[in-house]
Length: 143
Image 1 (cartoon, rainbow, N blue to C red):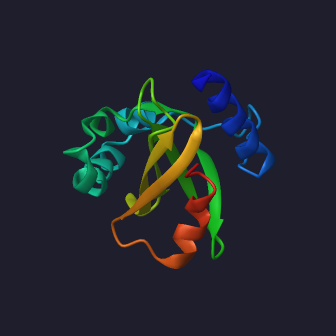
Image 2 (image 1 turned 30 degrees about the vertical axis):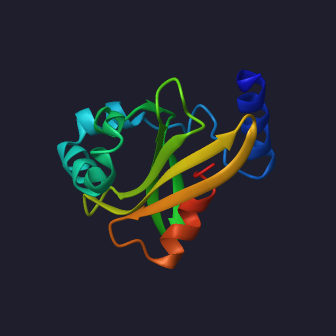
Image 3 (image 1 turned 90 degrees about the vertical axis):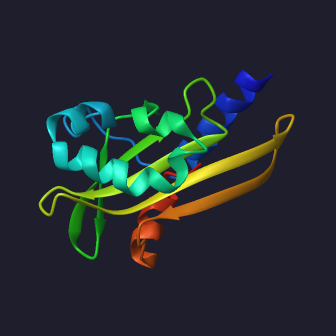
């Protein structure tokens, strides 16, 4: 039942406009990118510190998907997304990385609560100093 709910939730996300990327555009998974870019790894540890105590899976990046590119005010950023292994629907994160500045500009961590298949509550913890335009860019990656 939960598996069917998760598949339905993913279908809704794609129907709602969560971007998909072609093979040529697909990026690296967070764990690959962090290994290749020590600044990204350090930034990720910094920005996720407020949620890592309660959700230690974040420290190893969780289950990830390839990064995508988002534009905010004409500037391109890498978006990395991950979720709690074997329980993606309860906890996830998204971060916006400026490759040139070597800085995560914004991030969000989402914790969802359910009653059976019904989503009853969500809590978003904005990570770092997330400005509105960054939050809007990350919003479509949060569910």
